[in-house]
Length: 615
Image (cartoon, rainbow, N blue to C red; front, side, top):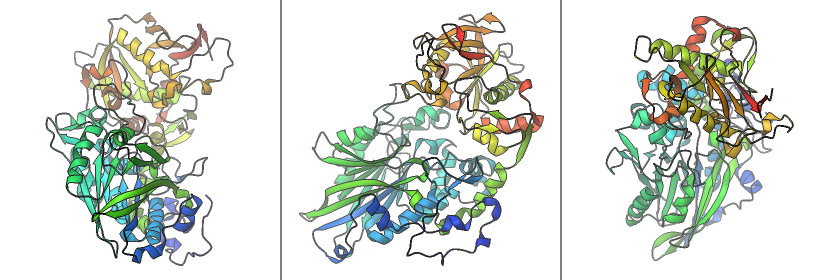
């Protein structure tokens, strides 16, 4: 990792090297102070706010809004799956500690009284750190401060919108986490089931006292994603509904304006594509641009959910004709959105005259040592946990080809899922049914090394905090399901060169939506059009009958309707013990002690073209 120490900074304020326990892998090098905020902003094409303006007392003033989104429990610049500092081919870095360094510098540059800091959601889930303090050593039982709450508090966030992943660990856990935050947690469109009464705080008004000026009242409205009712149905059903993003914003922006706010900022956990990963039964998933177009009275929108870097999006409101500035910072703390809003005084009230935004790369700074110190002990506990050995693998198992071949490492997931479900339904009416399983390739980089396999290896393979269910599908429904999954591939002519890595992700379909079944055999003919690709579907050598019933081991995300797969969301559920799949894999590996593909790997599906196998 390159150093980015500036010429005018020194490491005189860094803690002694001995303060950093060696097992964490964090070193003195991480603490080198990066480029100044002025330099970073200038490199991004930003004009520094003249400090002389601060003493003016005139009729214009510039305030700065900063924002993050999709932190996903990344507090330090650390990859728990690799047990090393995070790094990718683009040189990105991650974590709230990097964000903190940028925020500190911008506050120093602009003046603390001229800045606010918001988050657009998905903060507590998504890394082993988040998983550990929700399930392994839950803060709800220990009473410890959640490391993400501790990080947000240390940085000094002014408000945090709730993302869909905030609901993953249940409402009680979420409420406890919110109680630990210094900043308000906002979700205006999450309401008590069957009502329009907010289940969380809808908005907050922050009063900015810039010396020499009339106080500036900035209202920030928080909105979560309607997909919560699908993706976390088991946690919110009958308790929380999530209403339309646009309709909710229209309601609450009007309330905020009536309250006399000068500036309205929306922090929304939604992308800006206008599309949804689910059907049309619930409101649009990625509605950020729709907000800007349809709801009058919004000045700026911080958005997220899509994990993209969108420094500035300018949208004209159809009602007022006024331009709204939007920004999405890249996930995991890789970017910080920065808005500059120039306010002018008219008839005794501030209004936004001009607005612009950009995103700053956190690889231009180093971890804030003060924040590192806040979470160091909790980080070290997770590092020790993920390095715990669970089994010995007889050979190296890799997921690199799992997106176009039946691989042993993905079969292992299905093998464990079948084992858990079959034991759970023993003695029930469904015990006589064939038990099959489905799983998707979540991480092409996942590997079980030959020899010792640790929890971090399992976590690298199964990166989501899903739980396991058993549902009943018919043969016809399984055929429909597989056809839907097979849309993942482009249509490839029989004689075309074999280049499988170029055939995947058709129509933008992510790897995690390519479900593969174990327990039935079938071919995927990618020379055929989508919807007509599944051939030779059989169970134990016999063609699957349309009315034949199967128990299918499936994760809660899919069973809830995530990905829009047919039939599964309405299928009867015969097993749901809320067992975390990752923990089930760890428990199975620990119990058996050995991971040997000859015990579980069966090549039961393959790609073909016009009936001829690709491999």
